[in-house]
Image (cartoon, rainbow, N blue to C red; front, side, top):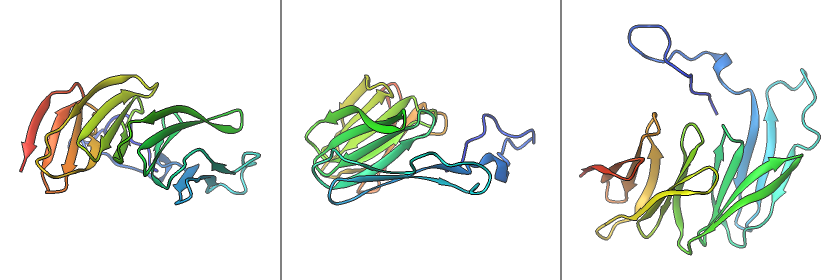
Length: 188
């Protein structure tokens, strides 16, 4: 995954100019399976330059139903995993082991999960229209039940400044809200 520069380059258009050096050359990959196991592996493009970690592959166990979503929080080096029953685990690597740091069980299926770009906030979307914004430490900032008029929320994303969230509905509509729980616009 690429890094986002702290500020645009010095040109007058305000556009970012990315170079190869601005991308990660190593990191962790994760994938969940239908048995509830999350596989995590370390990857690098610098195979001959230094020693990799002592252990590069982990099988994270805890889910009791198929894992449907995994989402990295790169700034805080955490991993969120969601299963088909709506249980969310937040994992953290500490002293060479992956441990569950937080469990969230609302008893409704998660349709999307997104960390803010700076990693400080999490956005969780549920199939029944409930949405939640919380902190990386697990504190709830706000939550609400959106009126979906018979549709579902299919995705939720943060804007580049992490001050707005955009929800996509299965009927093609978009809902834009501030990160402080103010509905700004509904696009039909």
